[in-house]
Image (cartoon, rainbow, N blue to C red; front, side, top):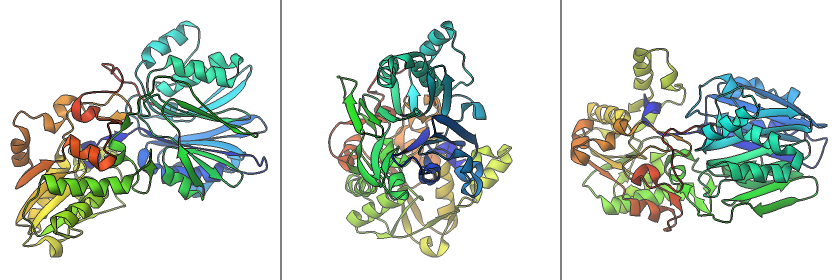
Length: 464
């Protein structure tokens, strides 16, 4: 049930281009995907290029399930691209797993995408009218087919034409027989960064994956920028003149790993600062502050530091319980959820506890944790959330419930929500406080908090 009570990122992408044609980089991509596993657990895949031939392997499950014991021998090549997926739209099946490969008269390409195209249905219909077939319900295949359709113009023009035809959020990596290309939407909603290895380059959703393969983070790919990497050089150009940075704020609140840096902002530092600001905005008399593992812990450290309240563990999370929402029935899901967290009685008994979490979506996790802590002897439980209330759906790459299922939209407001969770008090970080915890500017998408989006939102989103 916990996973149903959190917003979910859609995908993680990771590509390596080596100038050493004898180098096998599929293993690097395998480890890069492990570092990005938090961004998607439904499917994983790797495509590689060797001697102009693209080979692809993908399957359902975690990276370690699809590539058991790190076996990537059949994917030998000096250029490779990987993808981990969590679907927000489109069925969870092998047909929608990425990367997608297109083979046509002029060559072959492989592509992987993180984000949501808001005009995917319209573009798909136009391509189908032109006689182009689809094998999946993923809008990533729309991108691949657009590139293939325009490929006779050359990869740079084909990509430019494709990007100008699509709307929404995307971080995109494309492999050809002799190049690797990365692109980020004009608002930079979804993250993408560039790294360096000894004999080549890396493109990744997060900098933590570049670190994981021994690479060096170089910089973020800018909103509206395309990067073309080949044996000779790294070319960069801005394909969209009207760019306004609007990075998804939830990357910092929850999605990204704490050891990543996105658009110059340290994720761990942002979470600690959010806790510090929350302590100033919503203080409470308490004996212990604890964080919900894992993303709530940095904020709990910050809260305790400013409030001068002792930080402790309080809640233990089992790392070996699988995703509860894939259990076969409701009873099994509830049982799996019940063993995922437990309270440390020796830490919380007889204490007034501040419980820090990153967000509340449906409220089921918060309610269960309050019950656990009070059963363990906590005399009071005060919930503090280090983001504003989630009140609106996302159309740009996050799996959000309908507005009616978002508990912060309940008619009674925060007081009624507090009572329903069984807590002694409840407070959220303000929107201004969230922006302050980042870098104080307005270059973020806050759509799920405010209902104001950086680009026109459709009524029905499509996802990778």
